Amino acid sequence: EDALTHLLNYVWPNIFETSPHVVQAFMGSIEGMRVGIGPSKILQYALQGLFHPARKVRDVYWKVYNTVYIGAQDGMIPAYPRVPNDQKNNYVRYELDYIL
Image 1 (cartoon, helix red, strand yellow):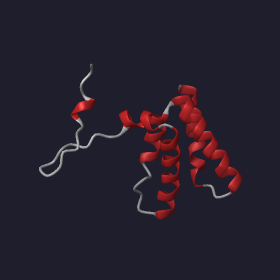
Image 2 (tube, helix red, strand yellow; image 1 turned 180 degrees about the horizontal axis):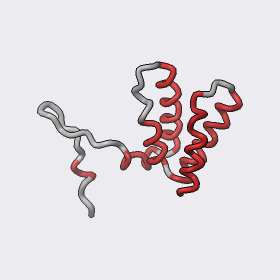
Image 3 (tube, rainbow, N blue to C red; image 1 turned 90 degrees about the horizontal axis):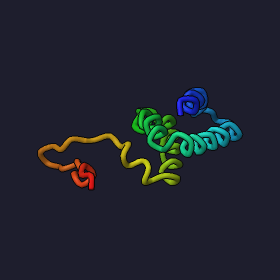
Image 4 (cartoon, one colour; image 1 turned 45 degrees about the vertical axis):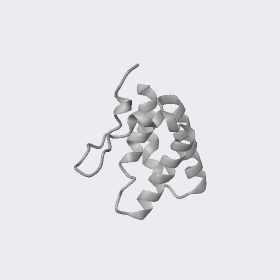
């Protein structure tokens, strides 16, 4: 896992490349990393750019997120950040806290 994370750190800066061959190679490597180290680790990398002010940054990060979501929806659920309840809305899913 450590070796794959190290490799991901070398691959991730290519997220903003525009050449079709590099984009395809990058997305292929993200798919491989999803299988190798799990979708939760890729989600941690993708969350940092999903709500970036620049549209071009958001578009690329949403493409990565959607690709991982299509491939491993159930594996991403434990990695979503917790949002505390407020006075108006209940965000915490208490049924996920109980272990049977």
